Image (cartoon, rainbow, N blue to C red):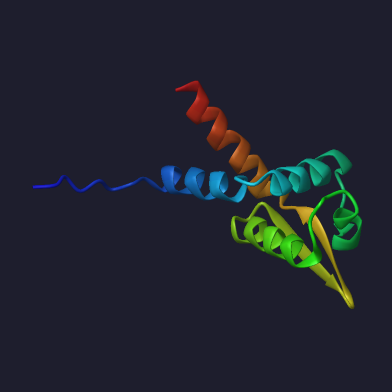
Length: 100
């Protein structure tokens, strides 16, 4: 009989964040937003990456789903920023994981 494992909320959170950061373009996006400590438009981000707009949209969507970034609509553009509260939670979750 197989043993059923119940994952903790912290484990699920870390896995979701790790998945969101599992592509170098996404790592680049959060590093850029973190270094700027400000928001920027997707058009500003696309200039730095060797990907097309549809791929960028997919990467931004993954980061938003994980709660690491947020988008503010300023028609016809969307301005992206780090979700500072969730970014801090992510940093602390990984710190705890690596300190164990």
